Amino acid sequence: MRLIFLCSVALTLACDSKPTGGDTADEFTSDADADTDTDTDTDTDTDTDTDTDTDTDTDTDTDTDTDTDTDTDTDTDTDTDTDTDTDTDTDTDTDTDTGAVVSECLYDYTEFGAADCDAAWDSLGFTCSELESDYGWDCAGCACPGDDVGSDFEPAAVGFYLQTVWDEEADTLGPWYIPDLGSGATGYLPYVTISLATSEFFTMDSSDPLREDEYCNMYATFDYTSAELDAEYFDYDAATGGTGETVALFAAYEGRLDIYSVEDRCYDWVDRDPLETFDGTHIGFGLGPLSDTISAMLASAYGDEWGEYESSYVAQYVAVNHPADTELGYDFVAYDWNTAFFAGVAPDTCEDFLLSDGSSLEICGEVSLEYRDGGYYYSMIDASESEGSRIAFVRGDPYWYEDFPNLDLDIMTEGAP
Image 1: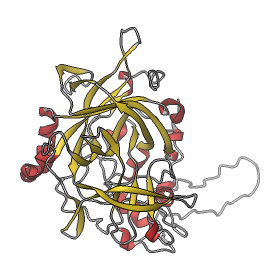
Image 2: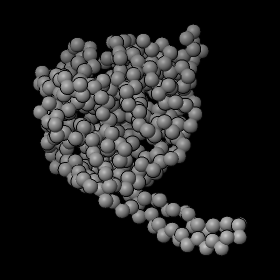
Image 3: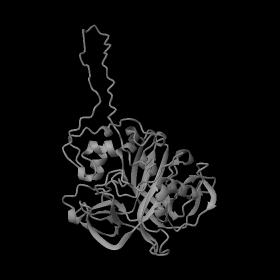
Image 4: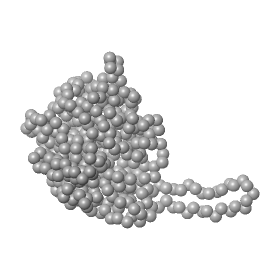
């Protein structure tokens, strides 16, 4: 089964790893700190411990890989050189490579959660390429063991999850920003993460450093309109299709994905071009009630603290084209593949953010945070409160990755506006 458990409600580097998407969709540097802010992620917080997260982190999440990477670079070159020519080549190359990583990173990023890029790989599973491209770190001098991939990538399943501010009365998905936690505020426009994963990913321990090679992410804007989506609870026993029990969604949106960032690992896909396959995907997102299956998973993950957070959670329903015997050749039904929690947001609190062309953009919607236990946490709110006029930061996390045999990857974009 392709099951992924929830991420933490803590605002941590591991949970909120999102790439810089340029000015088109993702994050922006506050004017107030534009000249010095090299940390482009939302998580300027120094909380990198595995946080006394309310999440018991049973997750096989793509994030919190507390890699005990000892650099498995066990150079097998024993250079026995069975050179058949008559050279008296005694080849003295004894290759005493022990595989130990000698880190000589030039820059210290302790205040952002790890001493340097190599330490971030060991403790959080972030590669140098991710840290440099997504967070503005400088990994000069580092060994960067996590960047030595070089193998084919054969994904077997895909997940889609949305982060946004939802304004129920206006029926819109809007931007938000994380307030200044020491390196300037960081602004975002709504975006969708498209996560590809291999079969091995779902069976590997989260601490296995090789697991980093078994998934990759792409990031996209969501060009949408308000919609009436057909929705059902997913049949987690059959691992395909719905239970037949229809669901009334709180709100729903239909549109297309426009990809603006692709991690390098995705391009190692053996059989397909990830951009050609998923750019322009016809997709729908809805917010609705939790099924018994999802509720049980969350209750197990949170343990005794579930009662404190239960009211903040909803399900995020996802619709993509599934092959079907219909006139169109596919159906478009939304299933509860993701969890989502509601956090407070101040819609009238605004900040100016600097764009790469030198212009500025005002983003309104400061996400509410709480500081406790040495770190910043989202300030959770009751998802049922003020029904009809709810405004909340909504963060989806994948629970189900749809298996490729259930999809036809050649028709993912059909029906998209």
